[in-house]
Figure 1: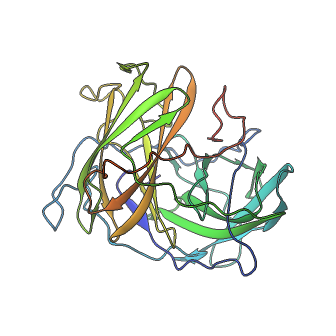
Figure 2: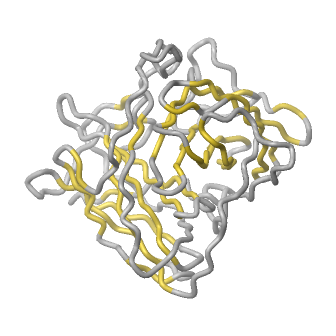
Length: 328
């Protein structure tokens, strides 16, 4: 993934006859390796943004852009566009270049050639997946979508070509079956994830970078031995309620840089593409398992009112490395 802040917004193409709810499984099988060298940029230095806030990883905050199925000569060709809720399926897709050929060479970023995000349009369910790529460029990952409705699939990658830019392309996926919509969880600054408590401090600001710090504890004690996951102590994704504008940002600092501690705090510099309500999803690893904590925040609003209800834990089926159920 782009080491700095990668923000992409898109005009959501709402599925004509369904609502939304979601869930996915874990990628299985080996990934075909390409010849591109590993790439992992440092996130330890922040630079001033044009608005006076801090950028991330030495980059200025990027303006909001349109997340589309096609962008800058590349297209996400989602071969699996419909599945049956509750039944195992194989999610398959190809990234094509402007000549229609399948892309088979990618830069490795944060230990992977491509990162796949699947989220429900009600933002209750979230998955960070790593599918396997066949030699012909076809990506696949087993999925089980527990509820009927619409899903949004995001492919985050950088082609292995000179001066290639990081891209996030999106496509819609539908699951058939009885549909039961859910409300967006209420704003919160604390979340529970598999017995861990995660506290969110800071403000997500529209148009300018702000600092977000997430503190991880367990049984009331700070967790100070977080494990590296995809080259970092934590990964943060934000999705805007309504059109699912996409924001992915990695923490300030990285394991082994001599200054970044393995918890309990994980800090980020993040910029919202606009005001509005967002869901934040933090992935972190401890005890050999990846956990996901979810938050609902309003961009530009510090904290939440005392009478706000705590958010629900994101729904997901069992199955991920060890006991994690978020399908990383």
